[in-house]
Image (cartoon, rainbow, N blue to C red):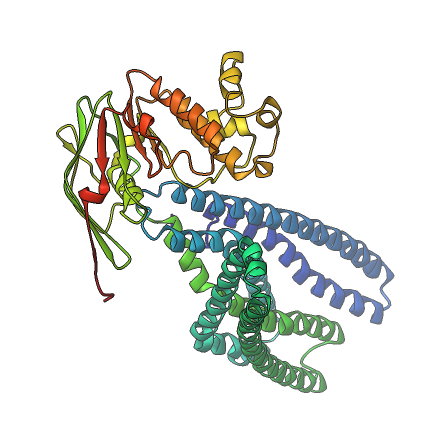
Length: 530
């Protein structure tokens, strides 16, 4: 991401905001001088002067309020647009995922960034950044005005009232680490609660409600304690800033009283001076808090930036084959198990079936030859004479139906065709597996596991790609629907078909051209954790 003054916001937009703030802040400063002149005019009983300054005072207030309105509207516009851009950037990089090793951990981090970390920046970072710009401008205008009125007061302001800003720099790293720990705990809890809700039925079956009630209480307490620690540290710093700021404020007022007694300033100037000092005390205190908040989000912004700026090669190379997909000395490490596969060949336009009991790494094998697991394996995977590489994309001509029944939000037909439009012929084919009522429904979440499986089978059978790969396609299917699948699959001509199945009827098994029994094709060995 290009370097910007405010994270995620283009500099030209920041400069436009600064321009708006300059006008509103300048009006607020000028108003203090008008107040002093108005008061002095009243003391001098100069009605013309009083009337003029009342009119000017009213106009300046209207201008100031108008520009405050523009500022607030524009700030809100910037925040919403920036959030949308950051989340789109995260999604874009997530969709570039090519290596699905440890995907669960990566997904938890990405989900936390999308649902938690980005939104947490609204007040702690963006609102605080905008406030910091506004308060800095006010301090500059007011301090300059004080120097013009009386150089001694101006110098005291510069010397004493900026102490809170120096203190802020000393503690920013610790506050940032505390804030990150708090957000990380919230992210961990989000994953924990999601997993708990997904397994709620098992909690009941295992009679484990007391166990998970205690675990939930512990996780919630961790989040509470992390939040308390962060906020208490911030409160301590803010209290310190308040003490420093008000002490400086008192010193300035004491000097002002001495100057009034000695006659160095008029009553009107005194009103202006007091107004400016009041405008300066709280901004410096608030600026310290804003910088505090900005510093506390440093680690979070680094985390978002690390996701957004992951270097991924957009120029993928399509890889296909005219003769065969082959593996040579393929070996894959998964957890504490190493799978060593014998050499396998999938011939173009042939039907292949892979059998063997569970735990032989059949699914891992498929994902390896498709490039979904780019790490933790050795050996060679070739499409004809071309080796499968990190930037290879085999899916332009391969359809793969996995074992899980995960579906996209949307209609059943969208999940099958990846489009909402369909022909009468397509609908009639889909009705072989699902009723028209189910197909035309809008919500796939209401489908049973068997219906979801049939939907995914349709996605594979209706694909126009030349290679169809099915991993345990008949799981969750009754014998009737399983037979429909096998009949439809084996009626497909001029396509390469690869099926993993550990429960295939003998008459179906015999119809496949090439058969691999992984019981004799895989050497499985256990290794100790390092």
